[in-house]
Each structure stands twice: as structure tokens, then as C-alpha cells.
Length: 388
Image (cartoon, rainbow, N blue to C red):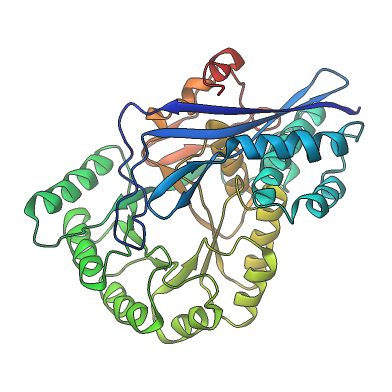
């Protein structure tokens, strides 16, 4: 069986209401998304099977959210499609490496490769009649614990209305069954401390709280904040420093009792550098932007070898395709702690509304699809309504 066609659809939709869970820009301005955009990859085989993948269609530039879908589609048509046609269905690793050579110098090459890689895994699973988690070695779990992400922290600790809104959001998520929450910070050390204090008072001692600083602090600030976070029993302190401050990550990991986490190092070589220096406690990997399932599974294996926890990242722009792929990866990782849960998933036009059977989240747990490949059936008519 051969690959005969590769298509990319840029799907965009206005949101019913702006998202409030985006990480603030380090300059202090809020990032508010009133639209969502994803690039859907469709790979067809000679025997009539179809595999779907997804990659990001947006990126941040300061506080602004920019569309990159058209450029990702161009890379699929100009580079991926000519190289992928006539390849067999079962050589994912070989195809991945070939495409990486051609895409790695491109600005959005890693993201494009991620979407194509997911589609190839989906197609391979369908051809073999096996769910994706089986191809990844089997399932350690059939339901995946989610944390609700990303609840925005306080910009002004003296604003009672803002504090009340944070409490209201957390209580709503608790009613929905979540028992773990990630706050988005990086708004100043004192603001971040107060945000976590309010969250802990609201959710109690039995719930987990994670904290994401968005790479904004220097080492001195991060150490000060980390000391307070560990006293508040925070589960992990995510991206406290810019990604290039690798030695700083290691120093924080050595000196603080709180777990240091990163989703800002998508390349396995970066992760290996942190692991060998005992410089990280939790690694998050995103199948829709970091190079696909192939890369994320490699990172998961590396973290297990170093007895480090692994978590699956899921960006705010994720579609049902990327969410299902994330669930299969989560099922297959023995050292998984959580998968990022998208609190706006039901409001996302590219979420369950594009599936014939919805993904199921109950009491803060995502059920892993059981059918072949990604285990989901795309309603292509619904999907193409959002084609840009």
C-alpha cells in the first residue's frame, strides 16, 4: 500500500467568546484570542484509507496572535507532498527523518512535520486495524487524568474583582470534575505568589496546582518565586526561565524542592542535556508542534530512563485530532503524570463538533479512543465549513 495524496486544510473560526486562558506576554499585555486556526493534514493511501493529523495555525508575536496556517500549507504542498507520494505506509521513522532533513531549516518546519507525522501514525494504525497506543507499545491506562489549563493568574493583587474572577473560574472547573489546575503567571513575583495563595485557598489541600511562568524570569526572581511555590505545595514550576538558560534550569532543580518543568525544549537533544545534568523534573511534549508522535514518544522514553516524569502538552489551538493523538501518547507512557486539559475544548469549533462521535471527558479524565488509528471519525463536511 502506497501513499497517493497529501492535502492541507487551513481551518479557522471565530470563537463564541474570547479565550481567557492564554499566557500573558512577558511585557504585561494580555493575549486574547477571538479566533482559532489549525492546519489539518490529510494523507490518503492506494487502498482507500485516510489518515489525519493537525498542527498549529497560529503563533505569538509579542501580545499579538498571528496566523501561520497559509505558510504551513505551502510547506506541505511544496516540500512534503512531492517527497511523501509513493512511500509505503509502514516506514514512519524513515519518512520522518527524510522529511526532517528537508523541513528543519524552515521557520515552521517542525510544526508541519508534527502534523504530517500524526497523520502517518493514524494511517498506519488503520491499515493494521490497531489503535495508535498499541503501535506505541500498549496502554498503561485507558483513561488519562487531565489538569485544567491555563487558568490566568492575577495582574493586580489589589483588584477584588480580578481575585473574585479567579476564584469563580476555579470553582467552575471543580464542578466539572477537575482536581488539578495550572495557573498562568509570569506577571511579577508578588502577583504570582498571591495568585497561587488564592488558588490554594479555593481548591483546598487535596487538589494539585501547577504553575507556568512563561519563561519570563531571571534566575534570582525564579528562585524567590520557587521558594514560595514549594511552601504552597505546588506540583511543579514550569518554564521559570528563558529556554536558553539551561544552566539556570539545572541550578533551580538542584536548589529547590519543587519540581522544575519545561515545555519550552521541544528537541530531544535539549531534553537530553537537561536530563544528564539532573536539571529537570518534569518534561512536557506536544505532538502537534514539537515534531509529532515520533519525537514525543522518543522524549517520553528518555525521561523514563532518567526516572523523570513525563506530561503531554496540549496548546490552546489544539483540534480534536491533536487531542486524540495526545491521548494515545499519554496512554503509552509509563511515567505519565498528567495530560494538559483544554478547558475551552467544547467551545472550540475544531473540537468535538468536527467528530462523528465526541471525545469523552468525565470528572477530569479523558477516555482514550479504542478504534483503529487515532480512534476518531472525522466529519469532513463539518471540518471543511471552517476551511479558510
